[in-house]
Length: 86
Image (cartoon, rainbow, N blue to C red; front, side, top):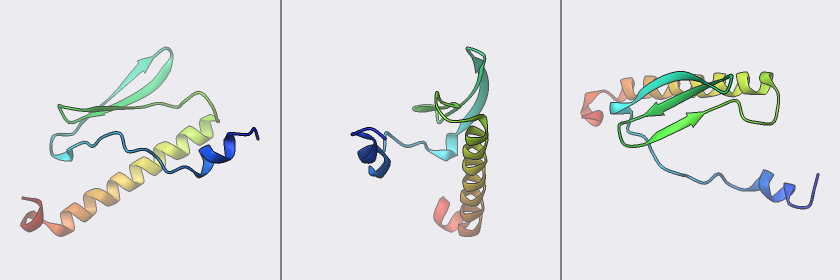
């Protein structure tokens, strides 16, 4: 570990924006021989990639984590129903 590594590991993530899931669209593209997922709402877009460090196993685990949390989010929206979700 180098001098600045501890600060990076304990730092809170920086929120860079938000996506409105009511208009969310997703697609997969191959960029420089890597699979990349893009998600946008018509205004903002986020790119999901396997990154430069780590292993394919790490990338796969991260993709599964995103998918699992997205499913839980959709289920919670369904439980709340139109009374709160418009």
